[in-house]
Amino acid sequence: MKSIIYSCLATIIAVAGFSGLAAAQTSTSTWKTSYNFHQEKTAINKDLTGINQQQQRVNTLDKQLISEHKAGTKTCATRAELAKAKADLQKEKAYLKADKAELLGKQQAEIAQRQKTIRSERAALLSAQIKVQPELMKGKTDAVQKTQAIVDSKHQLKQNELALKQA
Image 1: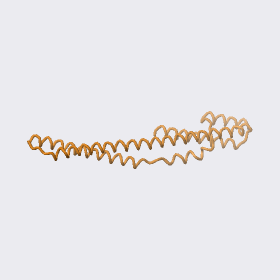
Image 2: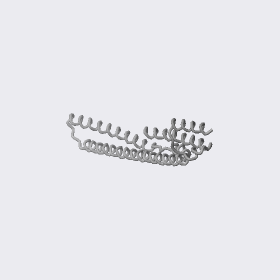
Image 3: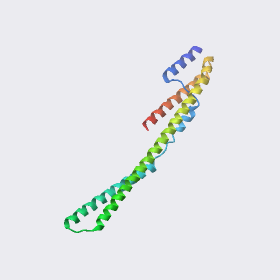
Image 4: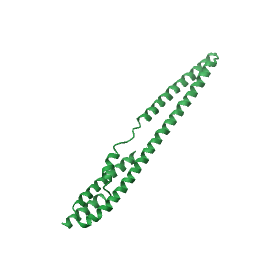
């Protein structure tokens, strides 16, 4: 009986590695909630639309100024409008830069939070491994079930790590 348990344990350890039980309950629920960056993406798209509109306005006023110059009419109104349009364009670009920085900061904070969660799950898996090893050595049958739960949580943790690398 003990030899069967030990052979099963050796197979499980060889296939999946060995870590912890406590994270089995937390790892699946932790990763279902991810931050939605919809508001930041919407602000960036709005800024891009504003930049395109301002760039078209600058181009139109620039062409109008050139045509007025060729016609020989001198108006300060067109130059003033062109200066205002260029200032508005710079302002829109500054908003875009700020929104991109905000999005990047929130994404990095989310990644840091996930990394922290992974580290805590690894620690929980390690402590569960330490608790289960003496039970396995004594040949308890429920230790094999605990070991399987540990292996399952280890697989979940590896999937979470892969998802983090893709983020």
